[in-house]
Image (cartoon, rainbow, N blue to C red; front, side):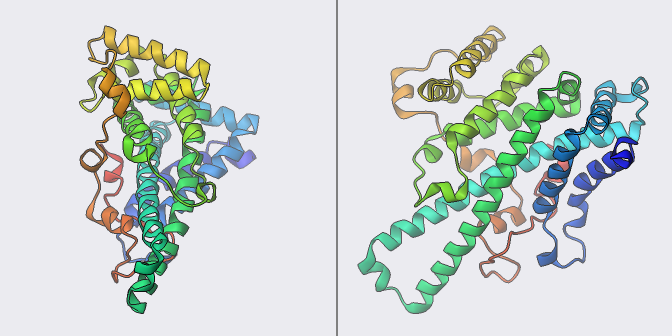
Length: 336
């Protein structure tokens, strides 16, 4: 605890989290290093340190330095440490998006294989090698979907923990983080309430830790905390992919889930976005009936390596049963 509170360990953890992008692609054992697993463990360490008052104070000071930009002096935080916190926030938002999108893609693969297996006659008629390969791919996708969905939920929870602290929140609202936070909220919401996710059905979904209602509550909580600042509302309004239909579908889902307070605040946010000309007015009856448009296939940026990961293949092209490591560029070097 003394080492962490001394502003030595904490900036080092943040820099290590960010530096994972530079390790991927180097001459390392691909099966022995996984960027997202390492980052998840760093988040868990930070979460434990947050429970200790001196350590939490150090994290808050780092955030205050990040919010102060080049004028980080009042909190006795070096500019390098303040920059590490800003980079950490950016990379954490990128990790959140990648983990959730990837785990959803894998759940869809799982759904397709389960649908194929339901036709027992056609499944049994497959050549043994084909059936074995599909079963191996199914097990691999199950394994990774469980890990990635768990990490996505934990990352979202940790971001909420940070953002709900009044002295940390401004670090999310800086020029190099505010736009990225708005982008993450807009696209995560698209994924979560879009038709493709709403219709997702797999056997025993609880084994993957996929709780759509809980994820929506957590995402809405993060967006609404950030939206207390007009700067973030402006960033949301400036997002070219902001979709009023998606926002109203999210609002209706919150109401259906009896998340009353979040629904009220979401309605107020939609009104504020309308006030700044974001074009998010009441949707048509058809929009309510069909749900939000699903833009997922064209709007999320993914590298070639990330696409390989989504398909569950390693460098050999065969399905891997291990949590995959994403290649350099999967987080776009923590830059939008």
